[in-house]
Amino acid sequence: MESAQSQFEGADSRASGLHKQLTAVQTQLGDVQETLAEETKQKLAALARVRQGDEELAALREQIEEDEDSKKTLETKIASLSSQVVFSLFIIKNRARGRKIKFVMPLPSLDGV
Image (cartoon, rainbow, N blue to C red; front, side, top):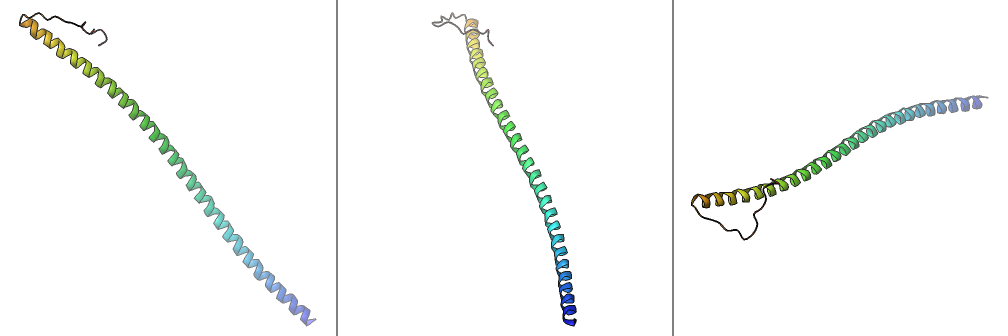
């Protein structure tokens, strides 16, 4: 009987030790799961910030492109107006001197300006 009692006590001791190990492993698993959940949350937040940054960058690029188109349009208008001003000054200067100017080509219209 002593041997059965001794075996029972040994098995009980091993079971108790295994239970402690199981509890420790479960605690570690919980810690790892919490860490994983926090890291996942941080990664999702970082991805959201990157996505937002990409959208802002795309909007800024589009605005730059629109601004460049507007700049080209304005430069073309300025060049046209500048040419018309120079031409008008040429006519005014020559009329002031009493010169008649004969044009071979029709004069450009100033209506659109």
